[in-house]
Image (cartoon, rainbow, N blue to C red; front, side):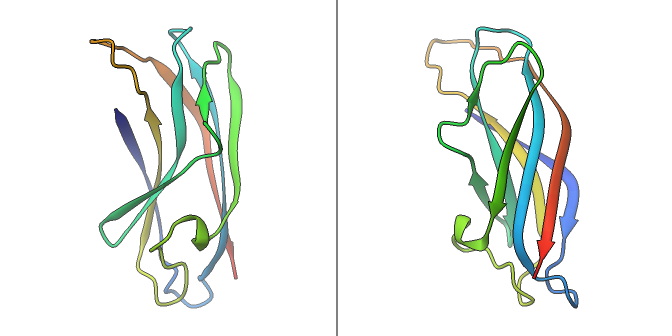
Length: 121
């Protein structure tokens, strides 16, 4: 199951001087019902399509606050996304995922200090 949490953040690379060179993402995360594990990552939406990015297995089980980051994401990390001046507006968010097949499964997690840095060309 994947759960997407879209933030109110939106960026328009078509505005003068706003083409995107790269994105840097970070968050603080915690699991409140350890020893559960949850996948995590970043996503963006452009033109009605959703694109995700994570690092490796990108799973956390932390019962205490910990930081996660996905640095230096470029358009190559999101095939089909247009970071140039001819690209449309982009919306951003984070996701959580789990692959449990054992019936009812509850995951209680927290996120804080959600941060996205847009590096312009």
